[in-house]
Length: 285
Ligand code: AMP
Image (cartoon, rainbow, N blue to C red; front, side, top):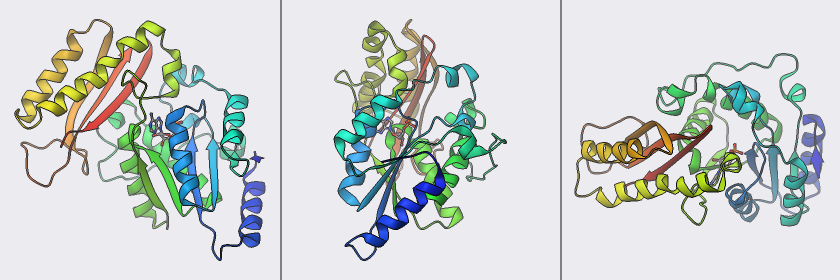
C-alpha cells in the first residue's frame, strides 16, 4: 500500500499493529531515494525476514544534495519501483511523500554534532550532506517508529553517522548494516550508475579491482604504501578523476599512523567517471 502523508502512514501502521497476531509486532524500515536496484532489494528482503511489518520510503531528499545539478539529474522511476516492491510483497508499506509534506515551506536542514564523523571524506567534499541526511531520517523515524532500520555499507560513513544519530538522540532503533551488492564486474550498485555509458560502467570496474588489490596487499605493506599504490592506480587512469582515497579506522573514520591489532581498517574512495560521482569502500582486515 502506498502512503503519501505521514498521518495516514502512522494511522495504518498503528491499526496493523493493533490487529496483528504478534503481541508487539516489530517494524523494519528501509529508507531509500528510489530508482531501486538489487542493492536496495537486498536490504528490503533482510527487513522482511526480520520483522512483522516493513516500511520502505522513497524520497529524493533535497537537503542532502550539495550539488543542484546532481539533484536535477537524480533518476526517478516511481512506477517501476512500486511494481518491484509489489512483486516482492503486497504487504510492504510504501511511504512516498512530496517535498512539501516532509519540509513544509522550509526546505532546510537542522545542524547536528556527530563527533567529527561528518568532517571527513564525504562530509569534507559534500558540505551539509550529512545534516540533510540526518534531518530527513529524524523526521521519518518519528513517523515510522521502527524497531530496526536498514542501511547499506555502500554508504559506510552514512551508516556510522546514523548509528551516532540514534545513539545521541536516544532513539530505541537498532541500526542494521547490510553488505554492498555489486554488478558482475564488481561495480557497487547505485542508482547513479544508470547515468554511466556502457563503456564507463565497464571501466568503473577499476574501483573494485583496486580496492581488492589493496586488501590483498594489506598484510605485506604499510598503510602509506597502500594509499600510494591505490592513489597511483586511480591517477594513472585517464577515464576517471580521483576525489579521495583514504584508509581509516572504520569506527572513528580517522586515519591511523600505523597498523594496530584490534583496529578495523577500511579503504574509502570517491571518483568522478565523467559527470557521475561514484563511491565505494572495502574492509581490509
Ligand atoms: P539510496 O537510495 O542511494 O539513498 O540508498 C538507500 C539505501 O540503500 C542506503 O542505506 C544505501 O546504503 C543502500 N544501498 C545503496 N546501494 C547499495 C548497494 N549496492 N549495496 C547495498 N546497499 C546499498
